[in-house]
Structures are given as C-alpha cells and as structure tokens.
Length: 593
Image (tube, rainbow, N blue to C red):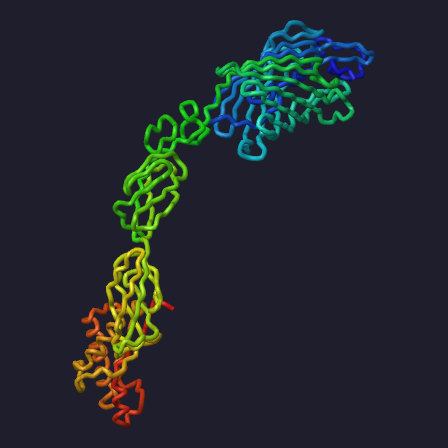
C-alpha cells in the first residue's frame, strides 16, 4: 500500500488531461468550528448563550488526489493545496450556528498550476442534547450543508449541494482528557470514476484531547470515510490520522492550534501529509461558577455564592449574616438576664452576631434554668434564633387525707392551665419551678383546689383535707347521692339541692376532659304526657342554668327532657314514683380515651 498517495484505481492506461479532472471535492478535511480539545472531530461542547467565536485555519495538503493508470503511470490531479478556512460560530441556547468558507490560496496539479479561488461555502449547525458536565456523556447532532461555490477547476469542490449529518458522543475521562466520537453520513453528487462510483459516504471520527494545563493541550484525530458500495475499492475508503496541539495566548482571547497528519491508506482525499496551523478568537467563557447570578468576569468571589442579604451584593462575595439570639422559656416568653455563647462570641438575650453561611452552635444559660445547646442554620437571610430553656425543677408531693386524718385512696391531681399529665397523690413528682394551681380529686370527695409554689431544687409537700361529695365522676356519667328537688309541679329548684348541684359544678371544673355534659329531666306518670314532657324539659333547663351561674361554660352543657318515657321503677308505688322523678347527668362528649 502506498501510504503517501491517494489512489484512483482506474482501468484505462491513458493519462488524465485537464479536461478530465473529476468534479469531486478531494479535500475531505473540514476543521471543527468549535471543538475545544480536538482539531477535526466535533464534540458536544455547548458555549454560553450568545457566545461568538471565530477561527482562521491555514493548512497545506500534499497529494490528496492522485491518478494511477493501469500501466502504473501517475498523474497528480491535486499535488498540493494551500487553503485558509475562515470560520465563525454563534450560540443561541443549545444551538450553535456556524459558517465555513474555504479559500484556496494556491492549488497545484499536473493539469493546472497556481490556481487561487474559493471552495464550497458551508453552513454548519450543531444541536446539543446532553451536557457532559452534568450527564455521564455528552450528546449532540451536527448538520452541514455545502453550497457549490468553488471557483477553481481542480477537484476541490462539489458539483451541486452537499450535506453531512452526524451524531456526536463524548465523555470526560478524569479531569483533563476528553474522548469524542462522530458517526454519520454525507451526501455528494454521484460521479463515476471509471471502475469506482464516487457517491454518498459513511464516515466516523475518533478524537482524544488531553489538557496539559489550563493553556496547553494535545490531541489525536483518526478519521475514516467510506463510499457506499466501495467494498473492494481502497480508493473509496480513505483513512487519515492527525496529531495536534493548542495553546491560549496568555490572558488574551486568542488560541493557536497546529497539527500534522498523514493518510493511512490510498483512498481519495488521504494525503501524503497534511500541515495545519490555526488562529482563533475565543473569548474566555463568562460563566457563573457559583450560581449566584453574577458572571465570573464581574464576580470578585467566583467560587463563593453571594448570599443575597442586600449588603454589597454587586461584588459577588458572601457577606456575614446578622443573627439575633433570643433566650425563651418553654412558653416562648423571653428570659431576662439570660446569656448565650457561640464559639468565641457571647452576649445577652436579644443581642446578636454576624457570621457566614453555615451552622452555628449556640449555648444559652440562666441561673434558674437548665442550660441548653442548639444549632442554628444560616443561609444568607437575616434571622432571629430562639433558644428554649426549661426551668430547673423542684419536687411536689400531694398528701390527701379525710376529715379524720386518714389517707384518702385513689387520689389524682393536675396542674390547671399546663400540659402536665394527671398525677397520682402520694407520689413525688418533679416540676419546673413556678406557681401552680392544682386540683385534687378522689372518688366520693369534693375536688380540692390549692395554689402551690415550687422552687428549684427543693421538695414541696402539700397536705390537703378532702371533704365528702354528693357526686362522683364515672366514665359515662356523674353519679349523685340524692335527688334534685323542685317545688311541686314547677321547675324551681329547692335550696336543699344547691349543695348537690354545687358539687356537680365543681366536678366539671375539676374534669376538663368532660367537654359536654347532658342534663336529663324525668317525671313520674301522674298527669298527662304532654304536661310531663314539658315539665321535664323545663326542670333540666333550670339545672343547666344553675350550673352556668356557678361558672360552668354553656358550651359544655346541654339539656333534654324525657317526661315519663324512661322510668327506673314502677309508678304504682310512692317509692317508685319518687325514683322516677329525677335529674341525671350523662357524659355526652369527652376529650380523653
């Protein structure tokens, strides 16, 4: 194989004359308009929106198209070409629009000499689908349309429109190496070159770019074209390798690129050698590395996000955030004279400090409270952090006895207005220091209220004398030990029943879990049904009004009369009728289980 020649294996022995030059484009090399790491292979690189760049690529190719006759005579249809590719690119979102104008500074061959002119103008488009900086691989689609603008007679331009469609896949390997692959097809006008049909082609490109440092990189491109149907014709399967390098000129927007390559077989367009030198105008990308809305070119801290606290935001640097620390008790009330420490800072409740974003560990203290440590997260917004302290506890023992100083069984108590759960009498209970109104209950006894002051780290004992009650609470009702008496045939409560109803009201006050109590009125069967029904309703309402006057909330009460419909015993005896004339207290709703 003659690696230095691109052959046209033709059957005729006669040499090719000037008029016989085929109307094909033997210049296969189209330098990439915007590849960052390679010279020929396209990558999926997506420039920032509205980014514009330009390149001028000067390259010389030796013997890209050579005719070999049947008797071994050689005609250099294109022996050497000096070409300048003038390129420009502009990005709009994921779409890069590019133009490429080849200018032949000098083209030589055996049938012509010293030609100068234009090549085929091309429109080059690339649509990026996956960003390799965010996805495992980069993915893009490229389309190139060539127009028949060539003005030279050498086989360096197509006769008609040409096109190229390709898929681009690339991946970053490590921090400094990029591997890119192109796979596609290109359309050209069909030309019969004696025993070879030069027509649409399949191509692939494989490129590897390695960045030595921020300014300098190396690359290797391997490119293969194959004319469809040229299975046995080497001329239709050119293969070329290109070794290149690039360097940015200081801090300027200019980048220099160079490459040297050779054809690896005798295909049309695979040269003896190729020299490339390019000069590009590629401004450094103005990224927003820290995603704070300020581009790196104007961001004094490009790697640290501005915290948007309204302080000198135009510089792009995060500023300290003001954190005010308030020490409160478990009820959310600020504690006077409380102090706090946070790292090397300290202060009183209500004072603050300034810090950068992150977590702040704050420890608060006060002589009457248990110290607490909490973590405050700061994210750029001015905040007020509350540190909650619990009061230092003391202990309380409730000792309940009857009027004969004997212990009372089944004693329970609760602290009104707090979330302290029901406690048993006779047991020592730990309580935060403070004033408490406790209510003590025992079955068969009147509730007992007592104001208790608990001080920190002390033991408090409260001894209470319980007085028997005429009512007691069960799960379903309030049982009363005697009847409620009314004036005959009326809904007027007799005074002898006041104490009984006072005990019922006191039980309701001591048992807030009873949220609705139903007062039921009943009569015996003397009199007509309608009159008895009316009387029972009025008596039940009278009892409800009495308890409201004693301070029971009307929302917790309801009344209902049943007349003579629900007797407890027979109405045929005086004792039975007396039991049937009654008032019952049923628990309609309760908040506990």
